[in-house]
Amino acid sequence: MRVLSFGYVEELLRERHRLLTAAGFQVTSVDTKSNVLKLLENEEFNVLIVGHGVPVEQRNEVAVRAKIWRRAGVIFLYRWNINRAEFADAVLSVDCCPENLAEAVLTLAAEPGKSDPSRRRRRFFNPGN
Image (cartoon, helix red, strand yellow):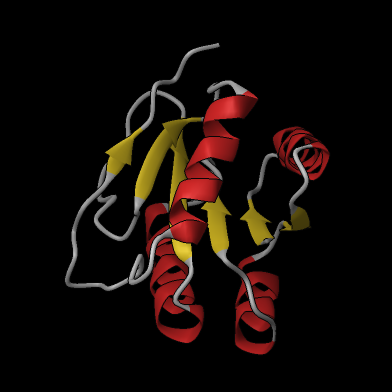
């Protein structure tokens, strides 16, 4: 199962990479929008995770591309609150426990039609620490 993790907070991006790799996922982590778009255009991913520090416009652009180009599930992470998360399939606290993030990745990757833009369902997973 391939995961693309995108964020601007380097420490959190590294930690997410480490945790998801330890959980058995193949993880590619990037810190620029151009790299995300290039990877989405050229490689297959099951899930895109977008960090809380990514501006709304960029977050939504990469989410739409992930859904259209790769039919990937999309997870948005947030710190305090999140606005305009309509393109996310799941929304989690950036401080959620690793098990919740892994559960969200597994759930989205296993659901057929998970990225159908007409299905505006979002999940808020328990942010437990």
